Image 1 (cartoon, rainbow, N blue to C red):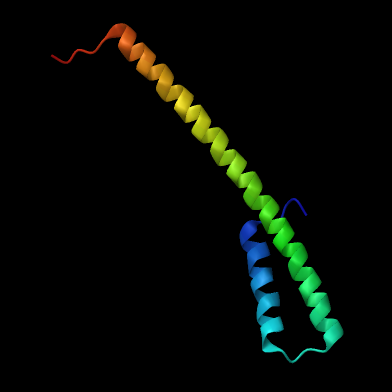
Image 2 (cartoon, rainbow, N blue to C red):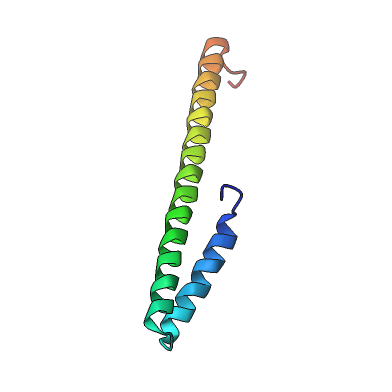
Length: 81
């Protein structure tokens, strides 16, 4: 689900891990929880990858803006003595 929030997915993953760690589940139930957890991990990694790309785009734009400001400042000089 594209509308899932990282925090919600992570909370669900923690709950599945907690249930698995208790160790009192039938094998089939434990396998189902493990598979669901693996899917949650995949979705979480996807969201984190998308967030990383967004951060890199912002950093790149900021670096370009800073370079542009330095060029303008060099062109017009500063009023400092």
